Image 1 (cartoon, rainbow, N blue to C red):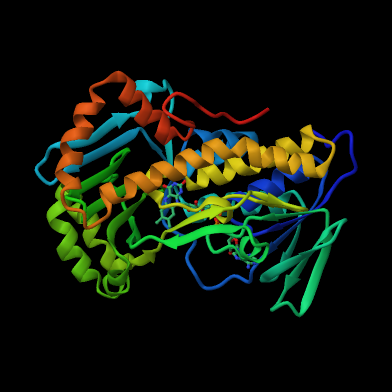
Image 2: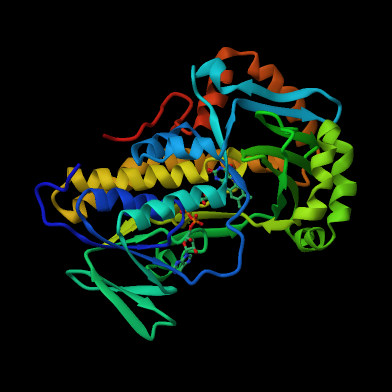
Length: 398
Ligand SMILES: Cc1cc2nc3c(=O)[nH]c(=O)nc-3n(C[C@H](O)[C@H](O)[C@H](O)COP(=O)(O)OP(=O)(O)OC[C@H]3O[C@@H](n4cnc5c(N)ncnc54)[C@H](O)[C@@H]3O)c2cc1C
């Protein structure tokens, strides 16, 4: 692939996360002059295990990273969600509907590490600085760094890939909505050399207040999630023995894994519902959580960030004029992003809320609905990351 038909763009990618690294690699491949700007490494873990869905796997494959990641990750064949009563609530295999499909359970640090390593191997310029905003004129955009005291640039295009709390989005006045969810989760990555968590995303529910999740992430490890209201997260992280007491009754044969949080510790996860006015502005594109953070009910955030990066690079190849390419990027992603945002908002209270009546309704309605092949197909393809509506699907533009 090469950037034919126009001069290479000077591009700054703000944020070397999942979307930012993918965008940097794809734009560099197309001949653009890319600089990645990442804030100084804080002493923070790179996050829980997550699922890369079929859509995100396709981008990783194009980047030549999928095989490498499969070796250190877990192939997740389906979802096994069960109520406290033992009644199956949501149970399916990806392969029942999409032959050969699977989710990739991966430690976020390994995914991010593989992408970051590829950025370094490709010789892409990298700068360590905290971006505090940007300034645009008619020909380019300049980044403000280090409290706005210094400038970086100028760039033809700034890619805001700085995650949920994006300063690039905020500073450019592109935030339409940015609301915290009242519920989050505590999580831990525990050793699981015995493979106790199996090859499925396992979730145990008790009403809408309890969700305990186990996700195999490969390399002899699993991630445990426990849903809780945000004002309880710090306390649970400080007292893992309390989490064990709460979670053990729901864990069944996976109780051994729950006990291992004593060794691995617990960390909080907070979710936000972010809507951008637009995914683009002059000399600026937003990708990933910066453009559309949601709660992780659908396990689609990483795959969406990868899909954004792919689409942006494709539109820059397709359109000679930058403004047209950015508009085309925003339009191409709109329906897909909107549907997943809507689904996340609709589903989150069904699994994480104080609306008690939703629990029994969910436990009866989902298994019944799943008997209908159309609904089963909706659920699997929704998780695979490809729907724009019950009747429409989205795939990576070529
Ligand atoms: C508990 C939990 C479970 C999840 N489970 C899943 C799942 O199963 N599947 C899934 O697909 N997604 C999941 N997600 C969501 C997923 O992690 C995100 O959607 C994904 O990481 C978004 O990628 P991103 O590149 O947009 O942002 P990030 O990966 O967050 O990267 C942002 C980068 O920008 C950098 N940065 C931030 N601010 C600045 C600044 N001012 N200057 C310079 N650099 C900056 C950060 O350091 C970071 O490197 C989960 C999230 C949580 C919290």
